[in-house]
Length: 253
Image (cartoon, rainbow, N blue to C red; front, side, top):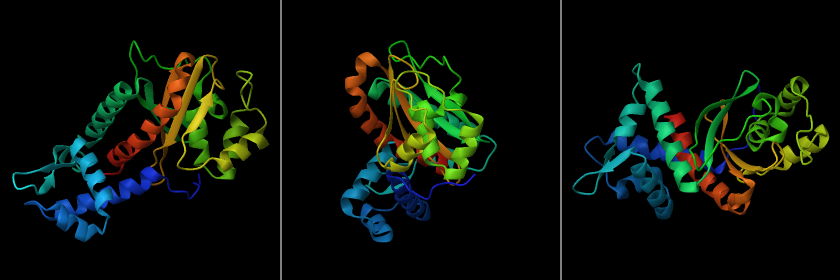
């Protein structure tokens, strides 16, 4: 499976965050933001935003003199022990639950594994119900924000392979069934703009998704809302885009 070489905004944020963590790890007794700026060469406003995110997510902590040291999340996720996998899952689930509550929507993490869509984790609730899977998600990539977001990250041949196994059948009157039209939409999708599904998979549901891919692993972060809350979709999708970086960071450490 080949990927489209189109880095996203969260990808760049994570690369910068990893540089910061490298500096913090190198100075085990603590390092000032001035020294971090000097070693990473990041602009002051960008560094401040990233340090705020890293503190919120528990990757760094500030000690009495204001210096930064590694936090508990970095210790748990950065270890090579047998519990690392569970630590990553727990961290992602905690982040998903917080995101669900902040955007007021069911949220999902998914990956493209061995030619198939796989939802690896999600967070829903009584007020934020998940999508009713009335058609197997694996067969509906062409109609879902989540699926289309994954397909945008594949090259042409990999997409054609997927659609040779999962035909673009009509699920609602809004579903794109013409492969040429679908490919054109996927090719024109900006990497920094959330992919939307406006009742293409299911009547009464709207969705958004953004890429969350580490290395050669293709993934995305998505949300769904009932049609009655469609007026909140753009705002929720923007929040989703902002929160993609912490999710990607958890997968990258």
